[in-house]
Image: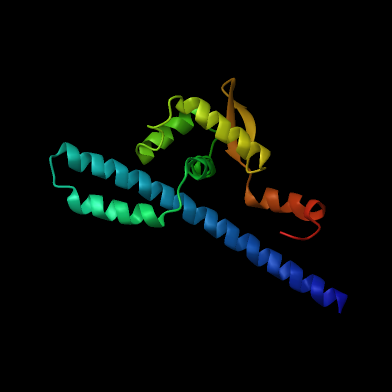
Length: 154
């Protein structure tokens, strides 16, 4: 009977890992679509096109999309295939449109968020071209490290 529980636990853990990886891919795609929509909106404005319908749709989607500075930064780091510096994260945030406009020192805000994400074991520090950079801890790495630390509980 003990072996049945262990097998069921392993099956559930494997399925959860798969869903978490799928979720990561979906979040990366959502981020890419948000950047694309922002760029296209800017182009429409530059062409003098009426954007009132786009404004309505953007407002509706903004209510649905679970977004915050912290979540956006984590998604930007997760979507990147290479480590990103603070300046690179800021450039990506700007592509999302205005999310850093209200911050008097955006780089300090980004650094603070990245340090909290390191403490939360979501990203890790590294070095890129002699500068501090960050990359996402991949789900498989995080899941493998959970084991004893969480006594099998999530």
